[in-house]
Length: 181
Image (cartoon, rainbow, N blue to C red):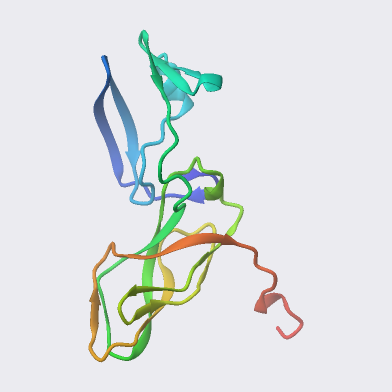
């Protein structure tokens, strides 16, 4: 499946019953480990007779209006890098670890497929640090990220552990494009 120019692996399909106030409904959707929120498309809104009153920040489902609210964590993260597999990083060494991106959702303007992305240097835990890594915008899995273990003992990191948030960057040059190449 592709969304916003990004290829997204689909794990399967799910049918979820839900209730909002007195309204009962069902959402049928695709499941991906790369998207962390439910995304309701226009097809679903039309099929369920939902009216979105933009100027009043509310929707009507059935005969009842429901207010819409901004998320309290809006803008906190857009893309996040997590470990793809369990990994052991030996004491006082560096390693490229295999990671994958998790998208908060695909509707945020920050999550378009037209940007380059980079991790920010940070400490994952005491003595374990992530370097800045530029990530291709069209790749969600098998992303190598450099991690350094400055501790005196090996560190075991579990699959799914958050490694870094990812931020849009502008790539200004490339080794392959220079006159040196």
